[in-house]
Length: 159
Image (cartoon, rainbow, N blue to C red; front, side):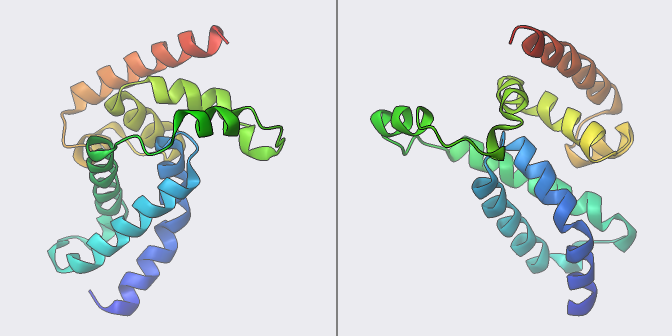
């Protein structure tokens, strides 16, 4: 894959990948941007490994998902509790809170349920493609989607 081809693929996947990561990170667009940057760096360094360039999007989403999981495993609280409470209680009313209830509900799902829901409904991937991205079986993805929908519905009804 040439550099120009890679740039073309990045441009075609950048918006959907950032949307997916922002939802996966429950609205934290700064974290989503960091993970997206890390994803594309990893993809560029290993772009010779891709066998079928038509599956570039799924390949990049798999890298993004794995980067997100790695981040979650290494995450340590870095904000002082007093700062977090002060930031939460500030009266900055803007559109960033538009989907906060959804992000809060998504945050309470398991990582696999959240990822399956987002890839299926937000990105339009098939069950088979999701299974490849998260390295699972199609039956497991179906179960994660079913459980995720039920959990999400229950969480959103109780708001």
